[in-house]
Image (cartoon, rainbow, N blue to C red; front, top):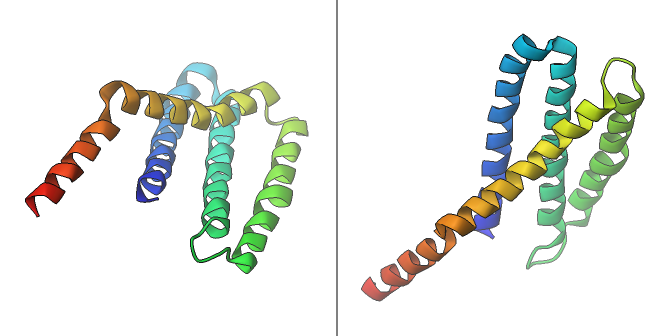
Amino acid sequence: MKKEIDFIARTLKTCGLLALLVLAFGSFYFGFRPTLSVFTGIIWGMVNLYFLALLIRTTLRPEGADKAAALVFLLIKFPLLYLSGYLMMVSDYFQPLLLVIGFTVSLLVIVLKAAGRAVLKLDYLEEEQSKEELKRA
């Protein structure tokens, strides 16, 4: 479970760094409003991923689901987060296509991180290191 939590935390950090880079360089090359649309989409995707991870952690636990916390996360994630996403899509200030591009950045980061771990065989190396540590002990 620790690996999955670390993976989500690393994904959120990478998305945050990428969002800042998009905001800095995109404002210069593409203008502020289109860049703000992509930046807002990235942040919205990060918040969505964060609350999805919290919701999964509170409902899928060995000692049973924390129903009160799961209900709070459900009320935050689905009605409030998706209502704000809908309002951003229909507003005249944000461009819907650029919001969707920003939202998919977090998905792209997840795919690239997983592909990188598979190509570099990082999970295999970590497994071998843990086996060697158990042999030494």
